[in-house]
Image (cartoon, rainbow, N blue to C red; front, top):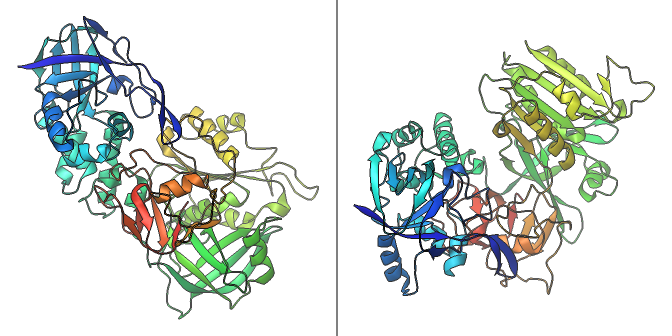
Length: 590
């Protein structure tokens, strides 16, 4: 019979960590006497980051005495006491290789159900002063697990834990944790996991992602495709940069230029996914200095050639160079098509929303739909200033005419006198929430949104208010994407990406392609993640030890060394920046 050894609680507080302040509830302390277990928490307990911890499906965290004994030996520690792993219940019994998702247990007056394994993040390492801890929990198959509260009630240390029923599929905590984080799982295991109603929605979503990747032909040997979209993208068609020939330079509007590109030897270029981008390296000075920029593919996929479209900014070094110097017959160096902002196959309605040059990736999606003579309902929503600054206008009209069920709504914020409503544009003014709500968009649609950050934020909110599921609204940011720095206070970046403070490095060049920044590596940083943070380049991370894959992204060129080695390697052509250092010059999709 399992026993509740200790009930541990703690409210979130500010903790100093590596020169930052973390707001976290990982510091739990044992309490005496009965405590009420409620739907979201135990009385006196709280979580600092509700995005990754807490909530109905993660109300109570459980860890076992046997694992305490294991870590005491593995880490050479004699100071581990109940609550050290951030758990609410320290228990004798209930090992991860026996407890199953969906099992129900009676403890005192509470009825509890196993919902998922512990989520890996850096804070358990912070609590134990062992930065590898998140990875070690997974690698040694000792994650612990969360409970959902079915019936609220009082619990107290010393009480027996009585099993009421076994979850369907009898899938243990250890097994499902390995499916997501480790290699060697089978699709049968993924399908079994999805047949467990008690499994938390987040883990169900990860399992569905694994199935979708398998349907696309991706290998099912790694769970990382269930952790991040980047892991499920096909590997790049070529490594590093290769020369492509500019075959045509064509103005699309007053401030947008398109470049047609072909292989130097006349062979067909590999097909790109609709919505992907190219990264170009342009040598703009006699000293060999290069500008590295990424531009979305805007043309018809699968033609054997590429088209990119560049907005000429008044002070943009790369775009003004393109306008002034790039001509048909020139050769430029390009990395292979990359990116996760892609239109998948399917039959659900599609909503394509863009502003200005943000039309480029969704235009490639529109081409793909038209080529397939798609019967899907398609909505094209675009915002421009006026007809002079409205690229691809006739191209879009021609493409939507080829589709059986397409609607186009174009908004001009400041129409010219020559612009004709009903012909050149649909409505005067900007795309607003009220206008989106009034369109009657299908609520089962997949939406793809590209434009300035504020535009995408507003449109995303409006689409969700219109009934679309948040998980079905996808955005593409031409510059650095949004940051994800869980629990860190004061991380709102107000500075543009910049060179790090202090003396310049002397190591390999590190290019952040989306941020338009190249800096020399400095061994003062332990990882590429730390260098990016020092440059205020937006980053996403959670574990910082190579297990969660939150930081996985595309590497256009170069090689890296890992320290520590990731629990599972990233997808081909990708890297984990949280535990890697450049071995030579690298270009990153950041």
